[in-house]
Image (cartoon, rainbow, N blue to C red; front, side):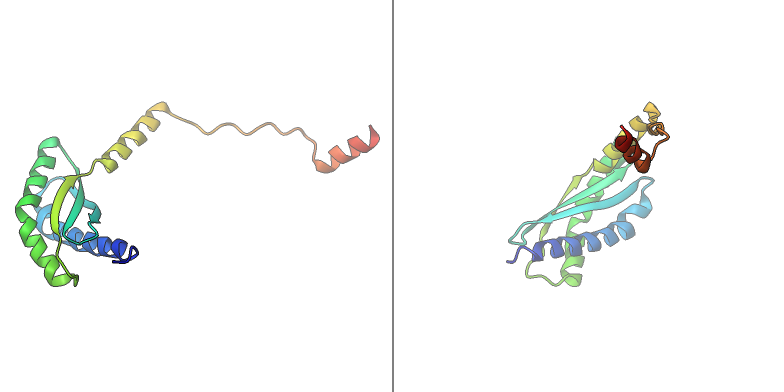
Length: 136
C-alpha cells in the first residue's frame, strides 16, 4: 500500500468518527469530546483512535467506556460509509494533549509575561553613520 494513502485513510476515519462521536456520544455528556487523531495500521486491520475529553477524570473514564461500548456500531457505520478493503478494529485512547496545552497557556498567563521593550533609538540613521565615518 502506498504511504501517501495512509494519511488519507486516517483523515477519512477521523472525519467519520468525529461525526459519530458528535452525534452519539457528545450530546449526553457535559464534557467536551473531540476525536483528535487516528492512526491506522498499514494492513488496515487496527486503528488507534485518540479522543480528548475536557472534563473531570470521572467524565473521561465514562466517555472512554461509552466509546468502547459503541465500538462495534461505529465500525459498522464506517464499513458502510468509508470504502476501504478492511474495516479496522477501533482502539480508543484518551489524548491529554489539548489539556496539557491549556495548562501551559495558564502557566504563561500566571507569569504575566510582557513583550520586551524596544531598544532606544540612537538618533542616527545610516546616512549619519556614513557621514561620521567619512569625516572621522
